[in-house]
Length: 218
Image 1 (cartoon, helix red, strand yellow):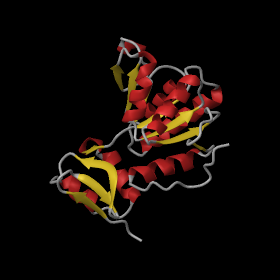
Image 2 (cartoon, rainbow, N blue to C red; image 1 turned 180 degrees about the horizontal axis):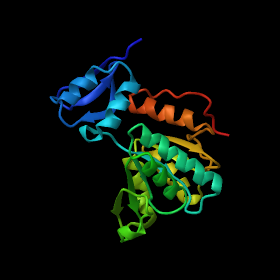
Image 3 (cartoon, helix red, strand yellow; image 1 turned 90 degrees about the vertical axis):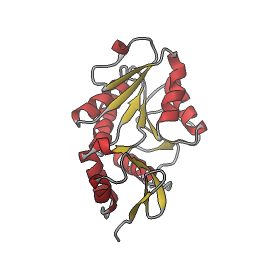
Image 4 (tube, helix red, strand yellow; image 1 turned 135 degrees about the vertical axis):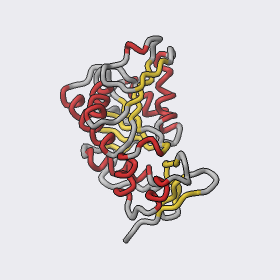
C-alpha cells in the first residue's frame, strides 16, 4: 500500500497518512516540496531528505553514553551514528569522548552532521568528529538541553550522567531507547538490535508512536 504525504499549509509540516511528522519544509512552494508530496513510501522521503538536507527542518536524535566507553560500546555508538546519518538524520550529543566521540565518528563517516552541546566554555573540548560545537558553560546541566532538543534519545552504555539524560528525556515525554549495558530505568526501551531501534526512531519521525517488539526493560 502506498503512503500518502501532504503538507499543512500554515506550518509547512509534512503529514504522513494524516499524522503529523517531525519534518517541516523550508519552502512549501519549492520543486523539492512537490517531489516530497509525490513520494510513495517513508524510504523515498528519507532518500530525498538525505539528498537535499537543507530543504527541511528536523529535530536531531540524541545519542548519549559514557565518557569512558568499552570497546563494545564504542563500536555500537559508531555503528549507530553511521546508521542514523545514512538516513539523513542529525545527531545531538555531549560532544566529548567515549560513546559521544564514537557516534560523531560514525556520523562523520556517513557524511552527516552532529551537534555537540559542550559542558565547558571552549569549543575546543569537542571531539574531532563533531560538526557543530555549541558552548554552554553549563556543566552537567546541559544534559537537560540535550534531552529537550532531541526528538528521541538512545543510550549506549553509561553511568549516572547518562541516567540523568535518560530521566530528563522521559520527563519531557521523549522516547528513550537503551542498549549495550545502558542504565536501567523504568520507561526506557531496552534492545540489543540496533536495526530495531533505528526502525522505531523512524516510526517516531513519521508520527507513528507505536514501537516494534522486542523492547521490554529487563
